[in-house]
Image (tube, rainbow, N blue to C red; front, top):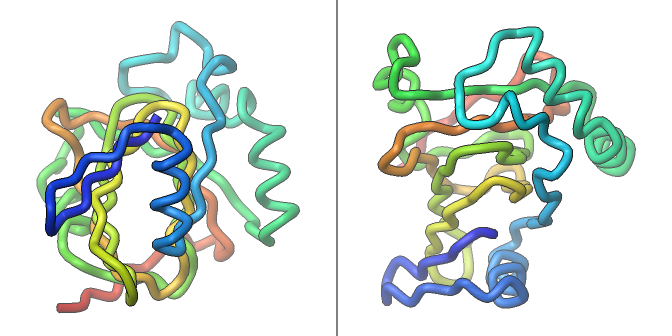
Length: 171
């Protein structure tokens, strides 16, 4: 379950209903899909392409529902681990405030990551996502992403454009 920190005050929100409420108030969609369908032998490690396909298959019903409801056309799996080649360069693409002209849709399968969210109204939030958390950051919404201390995450990504996302950096 996600943990929210109000950046300005340091207030930490852990109660599931309040986490969902805080994200909804910030204009961010949040769901808990759980990870019970995740094959146990694929947890806590980097995945080969065939194993990524197994992850997509495990969550096919949720992926199909989101595609149908929101018009996404493609999904993939991204894995980042301490031994990922060029990890620092990859992370540098996400860790500065930016927007995308399409929503950023992520479902955390394993590991953890933080979306810092800067809504146009209301306080900035740091949403630490855990396995089972699903989030949609709306199009043109100022945010950044960083990994937690263990520097590992596996996430399903959904896109409305098959080319994926493009970051537009903002101050």
